[in-house]
Image (cartoon, rainbow, N blue to C red; front, side):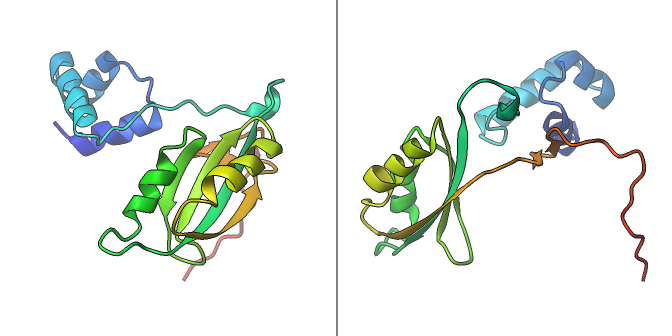
Length: 163
């Protein structure tokens, strides 16, 4: 079975049925089911997510990105600090970065106050964290390849550039 094709198909449509996947891949339903289970067990497929446009709901929701500068620990580097940050349920995503901050934390909360309280009382006091920079998402245009509430243009008005 072509695992790469299966992964690409699931990335495009995580809700695709095993039957449809099997038909497209030319495999049996059992083979595709086993392949998916193996990919999940081996943490290659780590979840299936729904993209929600919170602006179209009546639910309070704030997304923030927090750049975190940190001093690596002897013998552990940044891993111990990352483990401490990742344990907080408020943290949606955590990345080790190149650039001006060592970590980028993605946070989901109800209010800006919740984000501020998290940074001040939980994140900043972690041993090894030297500074934080909080950025609030004002508007989402595209999330995980999905455009959010943008007008679809009939024609692509980008300039053609050729070499």
